Length: 284
Length: 288
Image 1 (spheres, each protein chain N blue to C red):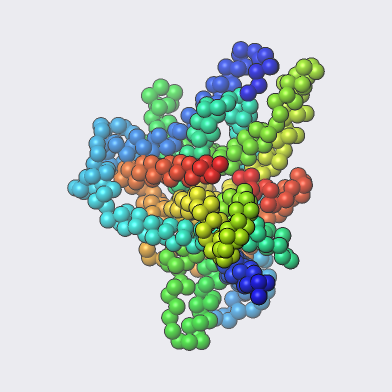
Image 2: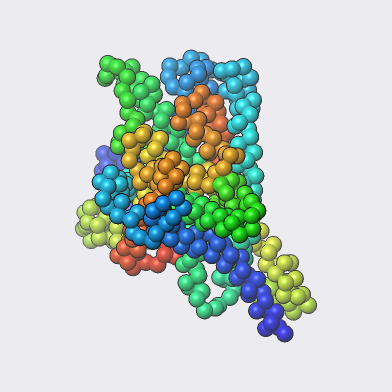
């Protein structure tokens, strides 16, 4: 904090007012979404018709709450399944990448590292269409050659998982590498001196050291997968994850049940986000 | 024997990386490029040509949308920087301890929430029956409902909101590393606040500014949700064109060409940004 510089009172107060306004701007949309989840009206807009829990627990049309709305519950499950696989794959590949980039020197390492970062700068929608085009042409070729069906390569959950995995892995790699760089290799050498096999030493000493980072990467992966829209949009088949279901509803105009879903999403993502921060903090 | 084993370990580590990059990044993009070069001449008959790119340049709607997407994204980036910089400076330099952590967290939380939810919030605020419209009527400033959705200002509001975090975080990180005594020295030597900002703070924050701008520009350019939902049907965003070629018109050849043009523009901007600031991609990305 800079205290040595005297500033005029007016300037200080303007600055503070600006910062306050900024945080209001940040909070406003989210607060609005949450408030209207409790409005006793079939439209998520004013006038305010009174407080109700119906958009959570209601079971009579048009007041069907989140917990009784089948399509939404089903898409939450779909999103959960996708997030689980994406996070598992991303953490696994991310850990391998971290060992490769931190522990090994080889020709073309710099080039591979840049390639590894590329998914970050490719717009999500383009990742989506490129995977769509490629997998469809592979499916066509295979089907022409064998006469069998390859549904896994057509738009659907497998492609959604692969599409999200393709860029979330980069984040996992960065988080886990940062942790591995702080590892004191003499600990591993000590294990080797005590008769551990190289793989045993990594499993018993290095991996436990990486667990918090792997956990944080996993949580971040779940979060990113759950809210991903652009890549998913291009690869989705008949089972829509939550963001896609919500988008379709939004375009049509919907009841405040969407607000209720959003409120739950806000709470869950804030908790997951804090969890990932705490996990990363525990490293230090 | 030992070297054989370490070679094996090396290749086992290399395999997932290569499988990931080759099958999900490299081959799909090559495939997309090849498809974009295909011209449909009959049923399941194709010729290699630049016809799809020619369509783009000959159809004003397409390249106008492209240019519009680009300059709206540049404007959104500039606005985000202007709005975010004072906030980052405040968090980095004028607060400390618990207040600093709290403010920083308050910046982060909205961005853990899905972009869809954030955009939905803006829709409720801005639409004809929305909060702002009702507030203005209540205050007697307007006579009837006002539609604030479905125009460029709404798109801009949404884009700036959505990208704010990616500007503020790198700025806070770089400003944090600026030694306070430099600013105080500048002041002691008689510099005005503006001169200190121009001569000391901004040059030091340059890496953060560049990282932030690159990421915000890319995100705006590739955004689909915000322009479509806040801009309505006539939002004319390039990603919207790509989507309609792929999903509605089923013209994958033209859609791929569009995709490649967007990818080209976004890579070009990243490349120019990195060259101008003499930074590496790795460092820039690690900061965000």
